[in-house]
Length: 449
View 1 (cartoon, rainbow, N blue to C red):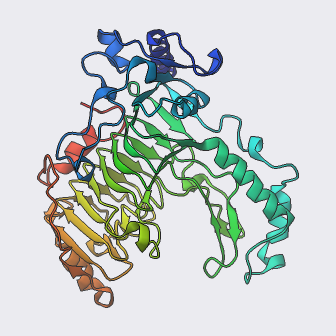
View 2: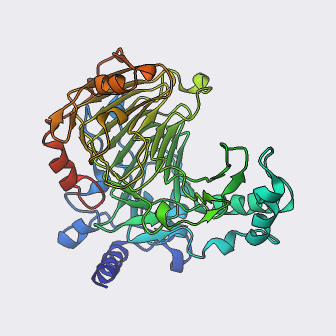
């Protein structure tokens, strides 16, 4: 109840600070903020001398700082600065025609992209019980993809959900949470084909796919496949993702049912960076309690778009209780340093760093906390033959050569050392022994100092 009252005060404060121009009807308004606000209350709402929305990526802070750097919407004027309290208002603020001018979108409170529930997206005639009956492997078998009336209606329902929960972020935009409890549940931020975007201080609860597809040909016993990442950087450049918390929140995989003996998987990824995306820095974020967490490059066949791109820096992030892809890399020169990876006792765990097709991963001074029974040899996963650099990393407080540990236990999957490049775009590099405390205290939404 205390959190709810605080949320109400934050929203009320933000709305009071807003101007009088609305993009949509008042019940779903997105208002331009008042340029002259100051004082403690205004600072909490993102204005005043320490305005998070006006901050830009520091020079030299990872790949997103290369070239012109990343400034997002920091230069936005009052007419293109919005405070939003609903998902509809958020999408309206992003869709507003600014004539190419910079924009700031401040998120106050939690925006729910699926407030009406899954039934609001169902196509007429879709019946999940009928779907389960029609495609039960005892009836349908395992040798062909599902097809027919209910599959067509499932696909139409999924399309309805996709249209409702995706929000497309334009160029020269900063999205920033107001206070400590701003966020989005069930939405998918699409940073697609644009340049110069900043996203900070949000708690992003992973979208729950209402209509996963059953694929009987996926593996020996079939699998449920889902859509929708919490955030996708697709073909975009100069993107800074900072101090956010990515989580499955109210719907961890452990809460999901099983059908046909398989997990009814309703989650995809937390963050994907794909299809020619380039110059991205993700710093001081929390990635928690998720399976397929962070993918950089989504296909071995994407050489035409991805080769020479996918340059990404990940630093001072916390990966806690995740199963895999922290990250998995194809093609890119990816600098991973000063992150803390926590594998929790009893959780499903596959690997942390996935070495994929033509990747050039450079992993330095990261900290890993592993429970009994999880070997350091599992931290790296060889998907394809590609060189990797791993230097100065610590496991449970002690220096460990991750490549040597992997190769000693898995000689048939030996990794090659030496990524062939050396990162230079770093503003601070901490001793890996200090990383757990630093990241625990400072990473995630609500912890910007």
